[in-house]
Amino acid sequence: MKGILKVMGIIIGLIIIFIGVSYINHRIHLSKEDELFVPNGEMVEVNGHQMYIYTEGEGDKTLVFMSGGGTCSPTLDFKSLYSLLSDKYRIVVVEKAGYGFSDIVDIDRDIDNILSETREALLKAEISGPYILYPHSMSGIEALYWAQKYPGEVTAIIGLDMAVPESYEEYNIDIPLIKLSAFAANAGITRWIPGIWESDAIKYGTLTDEEKELYKVVFYRRTATKTMLNEVQEIKKNASIVKESGVPNVPILMFSSNGQGTGWNENEWRDFHKNYMKNTQDGEMVDLNCSHYVHDIEYKKIADETKKFIENLN
Image (cartoon, rainbow, N blue to C red; front, side):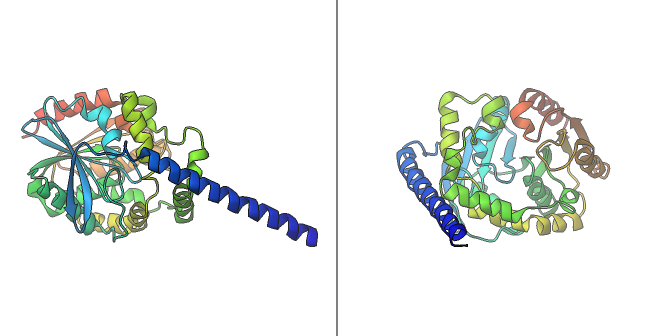
């Protein structure tokens, strides 16, 4: 028995040492990376914290890109797509609290709070509507709520494999695993995992070497943040609120993936989109044979379909 306890003590001691070394290594790297973690857009104060807004292009129509849950760097994640659209439209990327260059804050992430902050950030940056919303994944819930609550501000929604309320009804969110990921990120344990920061934006997109390096820097600062965790814990309730209000009366172009990376198989995931689009008055769905981050993979096709869709808007 004493031998077992001794072995367990050694193992626990080694784990503590490993975590300590990881944390110190992480802090050293963060300090070295400070000079790279510099926003090239605009910071605005919203609800007592700073939010980052990136803009590009000067078109008469404004496309607002809204990131999926947990996307560490929304501005870089969407770049492969919006760089193909900024010659015709005004591009705006709003980075929510806890994402990208925006502050990490421990605040409520109910749907009204999230939408209020997005709208106020745009107001502070003097970016007026109406907007064409471009949500990915979880932000689909916010975009639909926006169109429900402020229909005059939303011209259309272009869903980048966006979530719809029904997709969260039976979805199993593994909060303990997310909290474990947050601990690993904060302790710097993730720095020991080769290639963990290489997202689809890195693998398939058009980022430059400098942008890839910046993405890496942002990743180690904005992975499983407290704000993101609060958002995930509220998503089922938020989706339920949006479902109760019905389908908004705005044109919707829905790009639908093969389900990889969503937690659902292809048929299940596409059925969520098909069933939702059946209830729209002006909706179009485009199937894409790729995984969840469609804008990092099929950005050329999405850009082409986007231009056709916008040209046909009344």
